[in-house]
Image (tube, rainbow, N blue to C red):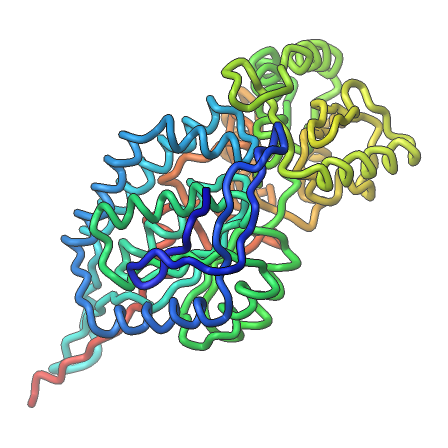
Amino acid sequence: MKKKIFIDGKWIDTNSTYSIKNKFTNELFVEVCEAGGKEVDLAVESAVKAFRNYSFTPAHRYEVLAKVSKLLNENIEELATTIAIEGGKPITDARVEVKRSAETFLLAAEEAKKITGTQIPNYNATNRFFYTIKKPVGVVAAITPFNFPMNLVVHKVAPALAAGNPVILKPSSNTSAVALRLCEILEQAGVPQGFLHCVIGGGRTVGQQLLEDSRIAHYTFTGSPGVGKHIQQTIGLRKATLELGSNSATIVHGDCDVEKAAMKLAKMAFAHAGQICISVQRIFVQKSVEERFMQLFLDGVSRLKLGDPLDVETDVGPMISEAEAVRIEEWINEAKYSGAKVITGGNRKRNLFEPTVITNVTKDMKVVAEEVFAPVVSVTSYNAIEEAIDLVNDSKYGLQAGVYTRDMNLSFKLPHLLEVGGVIINDTCCYRADQMPYGGVKESGNGKEGPAFAMQSLMEEVVVVINLEE
């Protein structure tokens, strides 16, 4: 089967194709057409034309986005199966992703109806009336990764459309089948011609062409800090929302419900084989409960089932590629050579990697300092909470942190002390609700996702001053 790309309201065939494999069996799943320079230029040209010539009203935006939400809910099993096959995500998690995507579209639809400016008080300018209006920023380029091949696409496309902007989507080639299916659903829902395009291709070709096209007003990207920095350097003063790397941590303080913390962490440290931006990568446990926590935590990890993502019993599916599995295997061996201890896991079969727990780590080991993006977690003990705070903050990243504690004073205090974009109390760092502002500090990026918050940077605020004397 061959899937075409979507440009200017048409499905376009190209000579160049990309083969998407079943990540568990390695069998061919589908071939997708790749865009060349001509197709990318056509997409931008069409988007600019649509933005200039078509009035995509808030009421129409609501209607389209709400219909997409309904259609997603009607096609959960088909979409989830595609995600599981091309991305390796366990089918139960893939179903949740589709449901979340439907919810995100509905959230964006509601926000389309709430766009307002502000009346500004006049206290020092006689006979002047001040107010602001908000208008779409222009053509938006959305560049998305493989790990949430639907919901991260939705978190970029839905707010952009809700704000009235045309979107050019470049999804990860590895998981582009579900993105193209989403375009079919948006077309079915009535998205105006020119307001949505989907181009498949490499970052050095299609991605670079998008970055160098001055007609694009805003870029929204999820991926590595290196690419994020390259985007910002290339686009200059144009706007970008960048959701980048992380080595997110969760603190298990001695006064918490240790059993609840251990069971939740055993699951979330390895969800989607650790290939989640806010995956639990570092756990810091107070020494007073370390022994009990480790017994409960390792027991939970031992129950996880590794295997076929289409099996409803599977907890941990394959990694996106064997090359990525080999990479993390090398990182673990490097850590072991430097003194780290592998308590459980550490073995690889093709791109299947066992849930792995490491102790006796140091901050300069790659498995701690870098983003592992694999089913690997380190556990370190601490004495006082001040030590835990320093351990969390001793990172070039700062996306989210989790804290398990019953101390209310600590719950209010820690968000001011932890250098992250989100602090999750009595849950892991791997929690996200689609309506919340989501984004980090330091090399975890800038800007926020979550429809209402993403839309703030997807609109221009224009001040209007009326001289009442004329």
